[in-house]
Image (tube, rainbow, N blue to C red; front, top):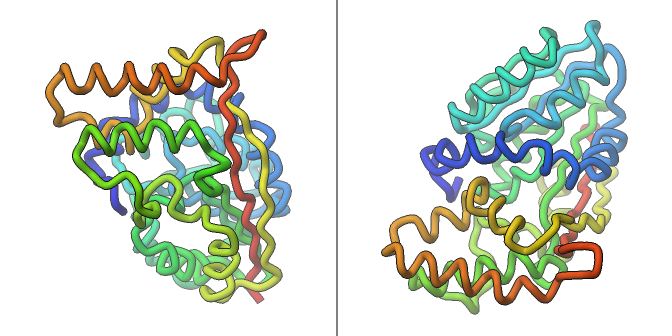
Amino acid sequence: MQHSTEAWDRAAAGWDRNSALIRAWLAEATEAMLDAARIGPGMRVLDVAAGAGDQTIDITRRVGPTGAVLATDVAPAMVALADANLRRAALPWARTQIADAEALDMDGASFNAAICRLGLMFCQRPLVALRGILRAIAPGGRFTALVFSHAEANPCITITSRIARRYAGQPVDQPPPPGSLLSLGKPGLMAELLAEAGFRDVTVQPLAVPFCVPSSADYLDFVRSAGSPILNLLRLLPPDDQRRAWDEMALELAQFTKAGGWEGPNELLLCVGARQ
């Protein structure tokens, strides 16, 4: 993955601290993802790049005690948080494991379904990850993923990434590099990758998923504590440069302020495929 294990470990506590905010933001999209995977009682489900395990809890409740869930992530700190959250929720039929999405090594595991919520785009080699996921699924099983759509549909990510890259001395006018937030958003790309990996009955559906908080400052507080890609770009800069970058982001993001609060547009892609 482009962002190192250490980077995700650094972001883990902030991601977990914002779990209620993330859960509210992604609730409907997560439900759609699990519905598309047809997850139900008694199923064995693989959760790839599970992070702190918010969606793992939803999966585990769906499959019930006659099912089983394995949540994987490349970052040990994320896996530890997911494990703690599952234990706190009293869901012993789920377990966790440190595993890179690009090196799952679960051929023949015969999961009934697999999901990946906002993780696949961080893979340098998403096709490798998809092929590994396919091999872990039983014939007839389904895989569903959520990834960010293209840049124009995600202006908040575009703004923060452009400013952070400029301050970090990196090109700002090039296509999203592999392993970055918007790297799988190009129209048609996810359908091509799923088909090339060997999935059948592929569909890709855009979902509007606005990020609603009281103000742009609240959004940037979330990015500061959990937005690993942006933090990774800025963390080695002098404090004054970091402050100027955050201030510039706040000014541009203010355009999404509405009468009832701040609403940042986001579009995700719900990607679905099945193993023959």
